[in-house]
Length: 302
Image (cartoon, rainbow, N blue to C red):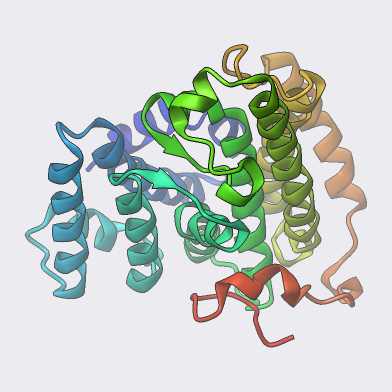
């Protein structure tokens, strides 16, 4: 896929990150666009497939093609064309997460929720570290956390939209195993359960945003600025969900151009005042990755 197509996909489907990415250098922008376009194409298999069984089989075929390094597969060819190269094992975790969306989704508990968020978003943070040439391995755990935080925000915003396609990412233990149809037409008790669960998602997201932002000093100034803008813009979505009193039935929440501009201005000041890597003394909170044992890049050593 050529760079024009990559950029078109990036612009169309990732407005928050695309908005921020203009401050990257040309080569970094092309690498990020290529990676995002690949992730988007994979996600579209699950979201736009003719049937869930067909999508499942197609994603399984992509996974098998990666394991066999079959360059005749268009997704493998796209993966190998990205420079700097992306880790195939990490990309496979992304595919496993996306493939799980082709089956009925009913998350059971917080551990399963975090594992899902790692696969579909934490992996993207890791791959971004690859293409943006982040050299310090201590950055990886924080990159995972920012991806998880953004995915938790996404889930909080899209509770109703996901329920319409038979998906419930709210852990069963939080909502008494409420079914997607019940989310769309809840009883008074279920409304309270769902709203409390959404609030809980956003509280959890804040822990991961905090860890994600702690890792910013590992990035060069341009990359740090772009990541901070994207993170703050997405975090603002959660703020707006909170201000709506967790009303997930009132239509999809977006950030406006003025809100994005505000976060850009704030981020410029934050980046200018950000401490150097020499001030990184806290380390990563390994309890955030207790659910991720055995996952690439996760910090489970304490």
